Each structure stands twice: as C-alpha cells, then as structure tokens.
View (cartoon, one colour):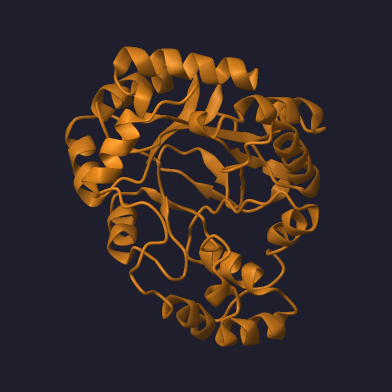
Amino acid sequence: MQKKTYSGQPVVTLNNGVDIPALGFGVWQMENLDECKKAVIKAIQTGYRMIDTAAIYQNETAVGRAVKEGGVNRDELFITSKVWVQDHGYEKTKKAFQRTLDRLQMDYLDMYLVHWPYGDFLGTWKALEELYNEGKIKAIGVCNFTVEKLEELKANSTVLPVINQIELHPVFQQKELQVYNRENTIITQPWSPLGNGNAALLENPELKKVAEKYGKTVAQVILRWHLQEGFVVIPKSVTPSRIEENFNVFDFELTEDEMNTVRSLDTGKRLFFDPKDPEWEDKMLKAVADI
C-alpha cells in the first residue's frame, strides 16, 4: 500500500497502517453551502489535508466542490464522512455510502464513521467492513461510542475501528475512554476540541500565560495540547484568519508541566450530547433529515 505524504505534515498511523494527518478541518454547523465551500478551499490552501464532514451536516456537496477547486489533487487529501442513524442497518448503510460518494463526487473515502451508536449499528458496521474490504473506504471507525458500545462492536466484528471521534476538550477529557481507546489501538479524535469557544476556557489566566510565552493564542495552545496527547484533532472555523491560526501549531512544543496545566482543567462535565442519555437517543432515532 502506497502511503500518502500530506505535504510532509505530521501524521498519525492508524491500526490498519493508514496514515492520517494529525490536524484536520471540520465542517460541522456550516449549513451555508457557499460559506462552507469557501472555508474548505481556504483550509486546503492554508495547508490542511484532512477534511471531516458527515451526511447529517448536509454540506458534503460543498466539500466535494471545494476539493475540486482547492488546487490540490484528491489523492493528496484525507476525506472523512459519517453515516447518520437514520441509515443504520446493512442495506441502508450501503445506499447511504453511495449517496455520500455521489454528493462528494468521489469514488472512494479515506475514512467512513458510524456517527452515533444507536439503532442497528452492528448491521451498519458489517456494511462498512465489506466496503473497507472492497477498497472503497481506506479506514473505518466510530463516533461517540462508549466503552460498553465499543465492547459490543468488538464482539461482533472482524475489523477493529481505527478511530473513536468523541467530545473532548480541556474541560471534558474522558480519560477513562482515552485509556480504553489507547489499550485497543483506537485513535482518539476530539470533536469540538476548543470547547465550542467556551469563554471561560479561552480566557483562562494560566492558559493565557502559556500562550504569551510562545507568542500564541490560547486556542493554539489547546490545539497543541491535543496534538501532543496523540489525538487527531479537527478544529473548525469559517473565518480565514482563524483557519490560518488553527493550522499554525507545529512550531512550538509544550513542556510536561504545561501539558499538566491543561489536563488539570478537566471538570468531567459535557458541553454537548450524552451518548448514554435515552432521551437523546430517542430524539435522534426519530429525527428526520433530508440526507
């Protein structure tokens, strides 16, 4: 298997031998397709080589157009998408995957993820395993899976997830799940790595002191912390200056004391949805989206 180089930027090797850029660009909540396309083009031109989208984001079409217009060959990029809970089950997932490819105008994905561990996710995983073995997906993984759901998946599969994409930021670090992922060779990929712009976090005096030391912003310090923890991180922004700022995190390194400063901010409290909440599961299983 010939490996991609991603313009020489840092990569993380997944448990199937595929390399993924350590820093990528997320497009969650970019519903305006023109804005999304411009942001992805800017990201590609800035140097990002991994783009993370999903069927439920309803912007795969914009991502596909941006890739075509971004000035970088498709085979130099790592493109991720996700199957939504409405399309769980073997047959439905196969069809959903093809719709995703059609919207992206691509003939393969670098990574395809199960977005939430609800419904017939085991049937969905079987479909992903087949698509992976057929070469239509280079790597398969999951999002928002708890230890219990990962154990259930592991007991009913032949291919181990390469990634578990979860809510993770300095105020909610999911350390037990981090350990499980690591022990099972699953890479942890934080979504909302900056805590959704949490004001208390970005104004934290200790983090501001670290940022001033390196001539960086607090956001850059947090992203650097993620990278040094071995995570694959996907910040998002539609602001050109922020897109550049979030990428400019490879020219400094935090000390162990500074890493511990960030680790000490963990409150154990989520800012978003709890995968174990039955009301949230019920709401998502009943959700209707044109995907």
